[in-house]
Picture 1 (cartoon, helix red, strand yellow):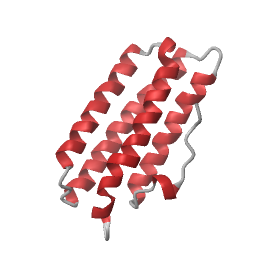
Picture 2 (picture 1 turned 135 degrees about the vertical axis):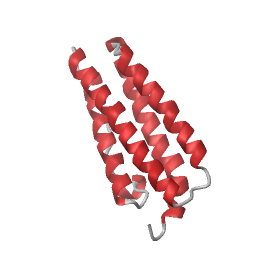
Picture 3 (picture 1 turned 90 degrees about the vertical axis):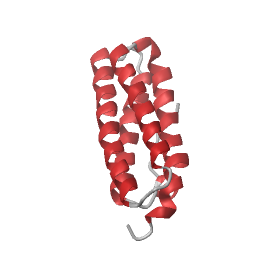
Length: 131
């Protein structure tokens, strides 16, 4: 699986803080991808990075929702519900921390983050003008 490469033209939504968060999350997912390529990945490294992804996602979602509230984003509730669903899934990944599922987890995290940015977050980009 290919790792993320930050490209502001592709992934940038035009808000410095949120773009920075996305870049940090991509780096974390890349760490999971790196672990998935190792012959004998460490369970402690795996759980540590999953906890970081989970914690940072929560931090990011709180900041993103604060921004969405300030711009009166009409789809705020739907975005919030998606954040909750991802947070619950991330918590389950941390709790189970099953090394046999590492490749599947890496794929899920990459696909989820990419879809979150390119589909969901791009929807509020037009509302950011001047913010």
